[in-house]
Length: 268
Image 1: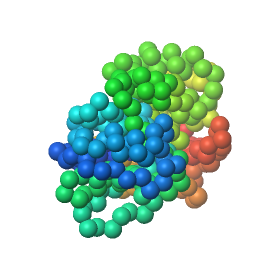
Image 2: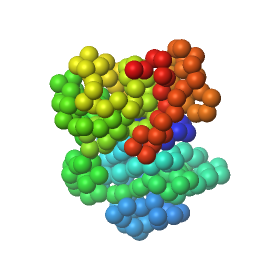
Image 3: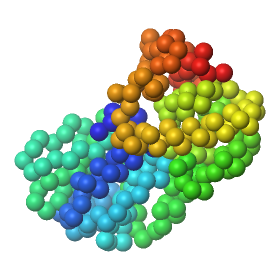
């Protein structure tokens, strides 16, 4: 699984992992090693709600994973900064930073791990996904059919902020964080600290196109961009990182409290 802070492509990779790990399996028990990971539920309620259930399908909304069951309950997972999923066969050692485990008949388990405990595990009863409080406040899905150039342009023109902060605002656009915001602005040739009011219609169009392209490409690569440092800025972010195009040293700037990287030559 990917190791950087989970954003939309990373959560999509985890969604697919979850489906593969749980396919056809019945939950025998749920164990919680650290109740601080739970939200709006207790260890007993989580175990009681999922015991005997099978996961039927999953959905990703922004940075959230929703797992539906054949019982009137839906499991919600949010990975925070360091959350991940680890599947373990019977008899194998429990993973490090295990916080909750969904164990199946036969002894295998799917573990929710989280070193820094910024993630969350919650259980909701008989409710539509969009009625879940965390989901209800999210903006549109950037890969959804309703996310058109017109809608994106209206979001950009309706808010005075930096493009970096706008892309990361979950109530405006769901799923993009600090890292993929850098990639989108890099691929669009736009500095992340540019004010939205300074963007031309052509730059807005480029940002829209690159948002969809970057996220789709990252999903195709299972969110693993480490082997693509020649075309993506993500593997080059950090001290002494270079632009894969100009080979100039990347600039670093704090924008809205988050560290952003960009190429002074390729991004204007």
